[in-house]
Structures are given as C-alpha cells and as structure tokens.
Image (cartoon, rainbow, N blue to C red; front, top):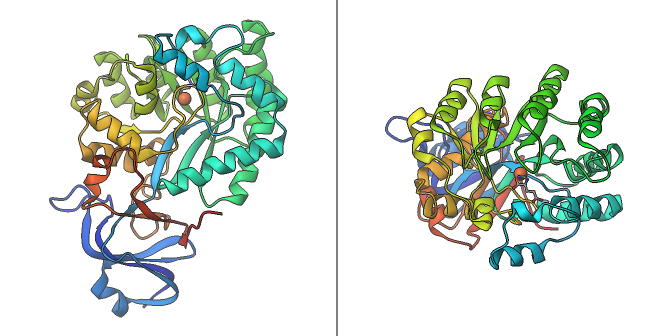
Amino acid sequence: MIHADFAVRHAGQLATMMPSAGDPLGCIRDGALAAHEGRVVWIGHDGELDAQVDLDGDQLDAAGACVIPGLVDAHTHPVFAGSRADEFAERLGGAEYQAQQSGERGIVRTVQATRQADPAALLALAEARANRFLANGTTTIEAKTGYGLDLPTEAKSFDVLRHLSARTPLRIIPTFLGAHVVPPTIDRAAYVRALMEEMLPAFKAQAVFCDAWCEKPAFTPSETRAILGRAKTLGYQLRIHAAQLAPGEGPEIAAELGARSADHLEFATPAQVKALAFAGTVAVLCPAANFTTRGPRPPIEAMRDAGLPMAIASDLNPGTSNSESLPHAMSLACVAWGMTPRESLLGATVHAARSLGLEGFAGCLQPGSFADCILLDVETPEAIPYYVGVNRVLQTVAGGVVWRPS
Ligand code: NIG
Ligand code: FE
C-alpha cells in the first residue's frame, strides 16, 4: 500500500499533462490523485485508489469537476507600489506605451513609489497579488524584482519575496531584474557598472534567474550581453525581455547565452525563432501586455514550425498588464493570436514549468511532482479559454493542502 495524507477524488477528467497514447494531455476519466508531504504519490482511476492507497488525511471530492495541475506563471512583476491607471487611460486615447517611458513617468514612476513604500506595505500589496494568483488557479510564479533599481530597494524587494514565500503556499521563483531600465539620476555607464560589480554579486544567493530588458527604452544589445554574460558567470540562469516593442537583437542574445526563456518576442524574426528553438530556450509570451499596448501578434506560426515551446504568462505589472489571471491570458492567446486551446494550456503548465527548470515537478501531475492542482467548473481542460474574463476555478490545492483565501 502507498501511504498518503491527502487525496483528490472523482475528477470528471484529470489532465496529468503527461502525454499518453493518443492523448497529449494524459486525461484520466473519473480520476484521483493521492499525495504525501506535498508530493503526488499515486494517480489513476478513482475506483482503484482504495485498493492501492492507505489514506490518512483529508479527501477533496471533485464531484465531477475537471482537475489539472496548478498553473505556472513564468513571467510576473509582483513587487511594486502605486498605480498607473491614468497611463492606461491615456493609451486608450492614442498615447504609445514607449512614449510614456520618459521623464518621471512609466516604469520610473513605479520605481519611485516602490522606493518610498515601507516594507510592510509592499509585502501587503504582494500578498494580495499572491492571493489573486491562487484564486485564479496559479500555484507557481516566477517573480521579478526590478522596481527598485538601486541596491537598497532591490534588497527590499527580495526581502518582500522571501517573507511572502513564508506566508503563502504559492511557489515563488525569484528573478533579479535590476536591468529593467536605467533609473533616473544616474548615468547609463555608472548604472551598468553598479549592476555588474555590486548588485549581481549581492543578489546571487537570493535569485535563481537574472533578467534584462534588451530594447529601447531599456538596455542596448552590448549592455545586455555584458550584464547577462556576467550574471551567467556568477551562476544565475537567464531570462530576457526581448523584441517586445520593436525588432532587435534580444532573441539572438538569449540563444547565444543559453537563456532559459526569451519573453514577449512580438518582433522576433523567423531566424531568431529558429535560433531560440535550437538553443533549447522557451518563448514566454505575454498576451495581456500585448493586448493593452496594442502590439502586433508574435510569430506564432514560425514558433510552431520551429518547434519552439511557447509558454503563456500573465506578465503581472502596473504598466502593461495588471492581471494575475492565466486563464484570461489563455483566452487572449487563443482569440487574439490564434493559438489553440491545447497550446494555451500546455503554455500555462508544461512549457512554463520548463522555462523555470521545473519540468516534471510543476505543470504536470505524476508521482514525484508537486501536489499542486486546481478544480475547475469547465467541460474539459481545453474549455478553459472559452470562459473569457470569469474565474471558473473552484478550488486550488498547493503542496497537498486546500488553499483557503485569508
Ligand atoms: O513586461 N517590458 C518591460 N517590462 C514590463 C512592463 C513594466 C512596466 O511598464 O511597469 C513588461 O511589459
Ligand atoms: Fe515583464
């Protein structure tokens, strides 16, 4: 008998996301799973559970609801203070996002609000965001700093992420995004030097990834190569914001340096897409940011043809995407970009997990994986994006424990 301390029973369809003969989603009808100490230990047909599992703990009856792995959000900026709702409204009146990134506006404005915020207030904001992620079915996020852009405020942002991890069952994978933009009141060369000589070494112990935005109004290709090259030498894994607003060298740099992910990619060329696929990089696409900035669609067909895995992320941030909802991002990816519902589901689970180095552990359900799953009021897992802008998540389970909003 397999010993378990938690089980989910009677899933109408349980999508393991482990491809099986003829079914890329690995669906089990009337499925069940059992967990022990936060990991899945058994998965199969509900009728077989009693004979194989010795359960000493809670059972959650899915009562025919669909069960899928907890969603994985591979691109989020959850540590920030202040609002930019007025800039959103200005864009509706015709202003361009890029033009809003000058003077005391745009990202710089969020940096100022974040520098001024006291740590408890910043933590409370981040915790509210964590609760919204969980409510919308996300159990793992990649979380960037990048609204501090000086040593003390980037350190404060990492402290927030660490305290947040202790308070929420949401899994948080920290990324250092000191190379978000050049902050005001310091010249470019001095900031790049501070990044490479002070900040990158200082935050190595606290971050898994280092990210940089390679594009106007942020960093040039040569600055990006220097920053990410140094990060790699120090042992960071790499991500990059690239080709979001205009064509550029960012995607090549990602491929060259073996980044885990290249993100946005609206303007990636077919050759860049091939290079990313060859390098084993994952494309992390951000449909909600694309939606509010009214960008062109990324080259989905070229990505498909090249076999480049496409993850879908919320890109939660105050400027381009104030949303913790991956199901909503999946709807946009399908309706606005022509991705299939299946591609969008793989994008918010398996491919997102791969971009975080969590393949086999998150975004899928199998013995040994995290016992993170969600119950959904949908006909089939592929119907998730069909429900537009409404939350069909009934329950979220993280680490073998049912999450209850606090
Ligand atoms: O992913 N591209 C850069 N960073 C964010 C936007 C940040 C902001 O506007 O505050 C993004 O879209
Ligand atoms: Fe971003």
